[in-house]
Amino acid sequence: MAAAEARTAHDSAMKPTRQAQRDTARVEQAESPRSAAVPAPAPTPGQQDTAKATTGSSDAPLRDVYHQAPRDTVSQAVYNGWKQYNLNCARCHGEDVAGTTIAPHLIVSLKPNGPVNSKESFVQTVCAGRPEKGMPAWCSLGLEMEKINSIYEYVKGRSDAKVGPGRPAVRQQG
Ligand code: HEC
Image (cartoon, rainbow, N blue to C red):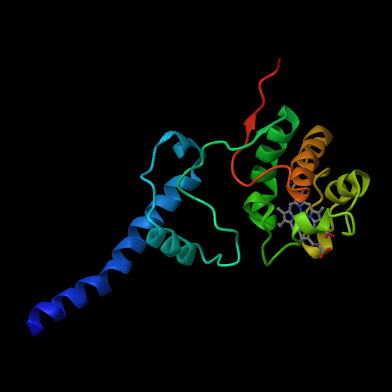
């Protein structure tokens, strides 16, 4: 009796570790854009908790990292901005513009009372950068104005809560 109980306790103690390993693999898969087409099994609430712990973002809003299917339909400019943001800005300013510890939270910066509350100040800041403070000067790095404008459309949409997290889809014309 006592031995069987002990084994049960042992098994359930092992479970979170195995789950965490599986979840880490899934999260890595889910982060590759191409894996969006690969259907992942729906996570149980327990697995979601573990995934949250492994990504270390307990403050981040709870979202399903396993399903990257497009949720928002956006203009072509916003979509291009999402792509360019992820190529150039996300590594410092955070995926989904969620903020990091190394660069300002742009959702906050672009609020009406934030330090970068106009398109002009955004474009100027991004173009000239603040090289001495770790923000690259994107115009001298060769990022075209058209791309900076589209990044603004995306980041502004995130700041205004009009564009959700995750990969958006382009709205069909007509
Ligand atoms: C290498 C890291 C890094 C990358 C990549 C980067 N930034 Fe920054 N960015 C920073 C840092 C650090 C600051 C804060 C500089 C300061 O202290 O004034 C900043 C500041 C800013 C600000 C001003 C925010 C405010 O509140 O004053 C804007 C806007 C901005 N970045 C946009 C962008 C955009 C758009 C991209 C992509 C094209 C980008 N950044 C890429 C590091 C980065």
